[in-house]
Length: 173
Image 1 (spheres, rainbow, N blue to C red):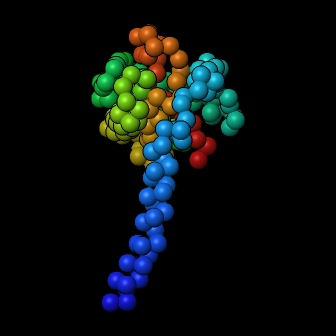
Image 2 (tube, rainbow, N blue to C red):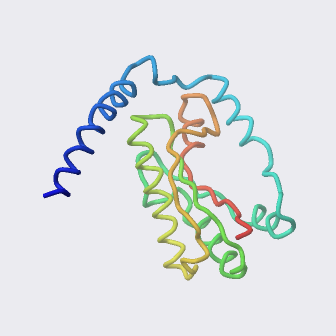
Image 3 (spheres, helix red, strand yellow):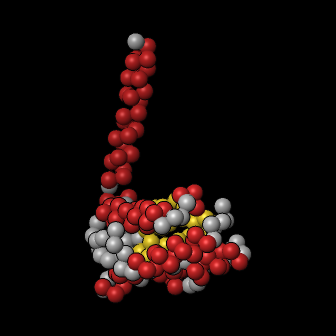
């Protein structure tokens, strides 16, 4: 009985705080718009060669493991399956290299849908690599970023296609 009373008191104290924060999150003025400066930053960031912080192992990883591109609205059929096969062969031969998988989507559609789609792409690549003999422990994390960090800012087909991919990110472990 005392536990129930305690739970009721805690709920009464927390509910007003939850309602206030939910109202604040829903107000249009509190939701930041995608700034052109932010988009320009990420477009410039991806245009540069990756920074090598961890020595020759990371440099070899960056030179030999390539992005896996995907078509619009799809997560289980990459545009070029040979890239994934080549990546898997190199990763098998270099089993000491650990990495993250980052999925991305173009700016077409709802941001929530694109987050889900990009996560599905990263998870699909993870499972495909495991099925090709890459140990699960070598893949540290597979996550989706949606349209958050674009490679290209234009809204034409050629540019949008560049944003639909899964990237491999080296980790020194």
